Image (cartoon, rainbow, N blue to C red; front, side):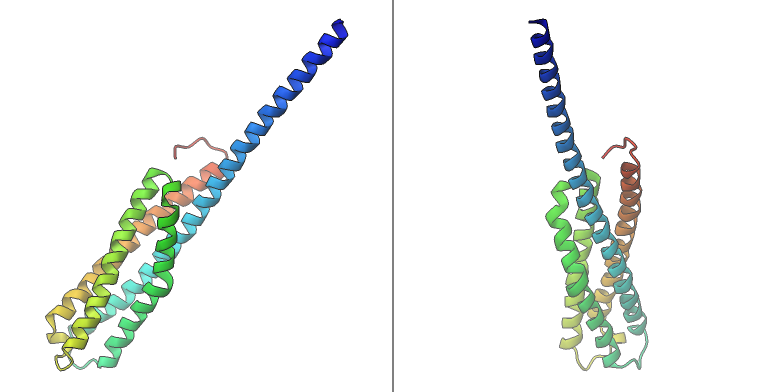
Length: 188
């Protein structure tokens, strides 16, 4: 009888420890899933930062050109087209995916994403408006087109904000993830 009771106790302890391991594996899976989402977010934020730098370059060139007479219309449209391609082909997909996974991320990352979304929206709006201002005033040189210059300046400012926000978010998130992967107990 004692042997049977001992065997039943061992069986209960084994089943209990196996259930605990299953729960721990579930927690590990959740952690791995969360880490995977955070890694994806870091990569997306890095992509946003890179696009921000490229857009900023083209916007700054346009701002310089808008101060000078004699720069061809083609040169302006070339840089506007580059900005349009960067925004549509690179920035928009990254921002869209960040918005999709935003709720799965810690609050500080959500705030950073909100700022990036706002900068991206403003950047896109100013790029579209610059195109329109340029097209509507075909006979007005860019150096004399105040609306065009205003929108180009806005693109430069919004690209700068996008770069600063994404750079800070990327650096902090990468360091945070590195600490998590090292097993440090860090706040989310």
